[in-house]
Structures are given as structure tokens and as C-alpha cells.
Amino acid sequence: MSLRVGVVGGGQLARMMIAPAVEVGIELRVLAEQSGMSAALAATDVGDYTDADTVLAFAREVDVITFDHEHVPQAVLHALVDAGVAVHPGPHALLYAQDKLLMRAKLDELGMPQPRWAAVSDAGELQAFLDENGGRVVVKTPRGGYDGKGVRVVSAATEADDWFATLAEDAHGGSLLAEELVDFSRELAQQVARRPSGEVRTYPVVETVQRDGVCAEVLAPAPHADKRLTDAAAHVAITIAEGLSVTGMLAVELFETTDERILVNELAMRPHNSGHWTQDGAITSQFEQHLRAVLDLPLGDPSPRAPWSVMINILGGPAEGGLDERFAAAMVAHPAAKIHTYGKAPRPGRKVGHVNASGAELDDVVYEARGAASHFD
Ligand code: ADP
View 1 (tube, protein in one colour):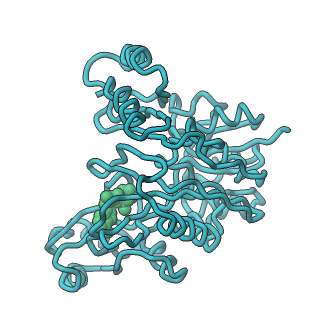
View 2: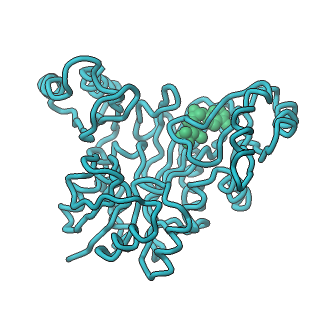
């Protein structure tokens, strides 16, 4: 088999596609933003992903283009499609991962459960939404947010003045997204893979724990998830994957409310932090599954290998001492834990790696994963 996949973006998600690509026999090429990035272990071009000519030249070396992130401009994506390049996910799907306002409108159209929301273009409209929704709401910039940047809880319309001012400077104008402040008992994520010819495969729904807006831990499957909940989460993810014609991996971030409903928070159309556990805890990892899906190959079995898996992010890295000596200590103390690193220099708050552990008892698995991850505090 000589299949060539081009990944736009050189971050850790592209890096983690490398091992399964090698195993399956896929040639992986990366278009990285700079040299020396996480995915530099693969054949790498360095170039600007917002420049259509650069991305087109990269695309000529491969059979299919996919992504490490969702920031490639629509004009560039359409230039690829117009040139006959296979792009997965395609521009029409990616649009809804790029713009949270368009996503909310589309999810309403598909009848998906979601928080009450409105597009607000000035402080008056935000105040009206505040008045209708208990005086405390969430405001989001529709584009470009990640890891909680671009998300703010406000109780007065003036608290979003700076964002409205930025909108006013934008030639295209636009609105902010206002959402009810959801009273959630926990956050969940449901992943599904879909290939262009239509096959879909869902992973178990997982619980995600965020700290300061950043994913800290994932428990797979989500504890205390009854059939009604798992069926509902799978139904939502499949409906979105099919309704938006997503190809590749889709992650649907969900809130479980205190009155036991699930609501869609946001979408990611690529491998996702909530699925890193699958590298060691599922028969087919999300990275292999993404490659299979974008190449329209038969999908792999997403079943767990063990009753429980836990993933813990290594954030920032150690304040003192290099990562290397910490790894050695963690490996000695926790030989059953799987430590993954992204080849990134430690910086406060930066995701530099993660730890996976699996086993029969959730308490033991949490202990193992936290113990190994604690070496990097
Ligand atoms: P990002 O795109 O930066 O990941 P999200 O939209 O996922 O932003 O929001 C980040 C976090 O903020 C969520 O994981 C959740 O904890 C919290 N959050 C977002 N929207 C709401 C909401 N409507 N109600 C309550 N909490 C929310």
C-alpha cells in the first residue's frame, strides 16, 4: 500500500498520527508552521497554511489532505477542493468547527440539544440576553478560541466591551455568541469516526475534567453512564457527523446537566484531547482511526481494551529540572503507565505530554495515572 496523507499543522495531534501511519504503511507528510515543531519527526515542509499556493504545492505530494487544527481559512480549503484535492474533513464541515455561531445555528437545524444561545452584536443585545437568562451568562468569540481563551462568564454587558470594540474594528463586523450559563454536573465527550463512503464508528463516551478551561483528565468510559446516556451521546455524535458530512474523527464536547440532559458545547473535527486514552486503551486509537477514515479505508474496532482507562495531561512541565530526568523517575515508579511526550519546550500552561493508564479497577487506574503524572508537577 502506498497511501500518502498530508497533515496541515505540525502540533502534537499530527505527531501522534506518525506511529500508526508507520505501522499501517501510510506515508505521512506534515505542513508545519515552523521548523522543529512536535510533528517534525515526519517528513515536514515548513510553510504558511493561510497561503493557498503553499498549501496547494504541499497537496501535490499527497493523496489526501487533513488537519492538526481547524484554522485553515475557507478560501484556502476551497482552492484545494477546486484543484481536485481530496480534503477531509471538507470545507463545508470544517466551517462549523471554525465558527461557533454558525455551529449553534446548524445544530438547531439538526434538532440537537444545546444551551440557549443568541448572536449579540452590541451591549444592548447582550443585556437583553442577560435579563432573559438569570443575569449571568457565557460570552464567546465565535472564532479562534481554544482552551477557554475567548470564553467569559459575565453578569454585566459592559464586561464584554473590549470584545465588542474588537468586532467594530473588524471590517466584516459580526456578533459574539451568548449562551446560558449551563448548570452542569460534569463534562463529557463523544467521539465518532466517519469515512467519506459513510461508515461510522463511535467510541465510548468519556468524562473530561477541565481546570482553568483546559482539559486536565479524561476517564474512559464515563463512570456511571447508563444506557440512556450512552445512547443519547452516540445518537448526537452520529447525527452531527452525518448532518455535517464530517469525514475523519469528530469530537462532540457535551455538558451533562444536573437534571440529566446532555447539551452540545462544541465540536472538533480532528483527533481530540478527550481521545488520547485510545492510544493505549482502545483496540484502534483515534489517530489510526482518523487516518483510516480520511483515506476511506474500513474503520477499526473502537472498543476499549480494558474496563477503565485514564488520561492525564502534563501541563507546563516541571518548573525546575529537565523533562528527561522526570521521565526516568516516572518510568521507574510507574512501569505500567504510558508516558507520551510532544517534543515541546515546557512553558506554563502548555500541553507538553500526557500519561495513559488502563486496568480493571477505576480507583487503581486513577492512582497509577496520577502517580506517574505527578512527577511532572
Ligand atoms: P474552547 O473553544 O476555548 O475550548 P469552550 O466553548 O469549550 O471553549 O469552553 C471552555 C469551557 O468553558 C468549557 O469546557 C466549560 O467548562 C466552560 N463553558 C463553556 N460554555 C459554557 C456554558 N454555556 N455554560 C457553562 N460553562 C461553559
